[in-house]
Amino acid sequence: MSDNRQSLSDLGAALGQPAAAPTEGQAAAPAAAAAEAYLAGEIAEPAAPTMPLRPQELDQYGRAYATGRRKDAVARVWLKPGTGKITINGRDQEIYFARPTLRLVINQPFGVAEREGQYDVICTVKGGGLSGQAGAVKHGISQALTKYEPVLRAPVKKAGFLTRDSRAVERKKYGKAKARRSFQFSKR
Image (cartoon, rainbow, N blue to C red; front, side, top):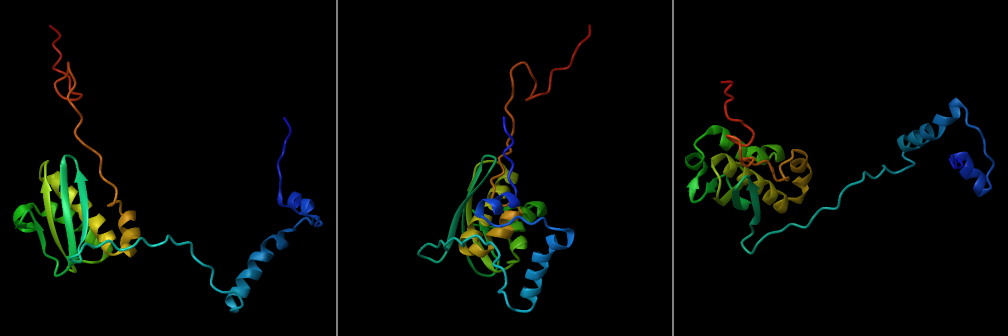
């Protein structure tokens, strides 16, 4: 097997240019020259690689719709500009989610996007328990927020709110008390 390693000097030789061995000072010279040209205003600012924005998705009433899921819970979420009121299954969030930790979970996407109190949320949620329902509402709010304001996709995605949390209860196995718990061992 032959060694086919190629370097920049090999490329220069292939193009017919003389290969010059760069010294320590010459290796940094092109980068320094480019930096000086940029500071002098001769070169425009280098373009940052950005993702193209997705189009805004609204229904005929000017709302963004999304579905959120967590454990066995499914939440249908509508988001529109407003005063920050969150209604779940026709009830206010303080009544539906009595625990402050669940309300904190629901409001996390607005905190990351710095949009507290700027959107009204109407959602219906079915299945699962309160913790799963709160996670489903959070997932739905995150999806709807990025559909209403596509610019917010990067911070919400970085926080991990757009990914469905797939953790669920492991099934019970035969010969075991629970999923992994064995029955108590009796020596005699």
